[in-house]
Image 1 (tube, rainbow over the protein chains, first blue to last red):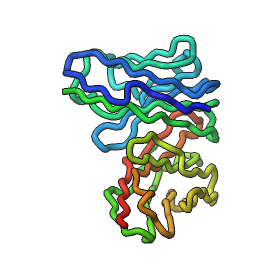
Image 2: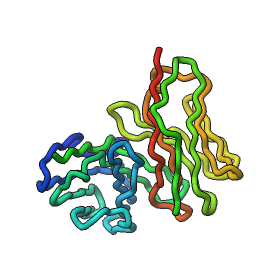
Image 3: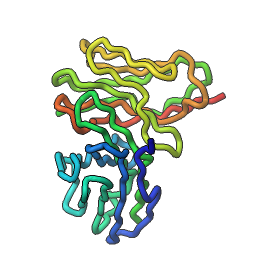
Image 4: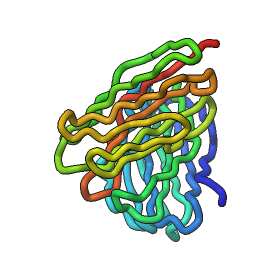
Length: 115
Length: 112
């Protein structure tokens, strides 16, 4: 079974540009999460999809961030326009259910650097 | 609100030394608790978990016990190896499921 994949692995952009990150969850996992780790701090939750619906987007920092999951398969996270403070590692995770006993499987992350 | 606090790193140990990484959490209800590990160049992997008080999670020689009375979930290993060098994250689930709440991560470096 393939794991969670993310693309690209690294992205370096200039302030004001747009970047789109992609996440492919494990097949059959309805739940998809985005997290972010900024500058060696804690990993923070951004949002949670159940299939194509946004279940919880309380962690999205502002309206420069737009997440989609059309068709309930892969997801994209777009940052437009990017700011310096958006630099960090963006993780995607998926799980079959959102229950407390279900394990979230993480991808390798996308390292975003905004110059 | 819900939070997780873990000891700051980096932690540097010699091979075969004993490891403890402290983790405490805020207690609203009885959340599931997790340790994730990120090896260099890789993604987060679940290391172990415990779902109720007094449960002990274990994997690859690592152990952690869910202590309700001290709201702690400390990670231990009796004899670390160079291959254990990684960043370790403590996390809790919310009572209603969904998102995980992470600590800030502890970088471990094991020297031969």
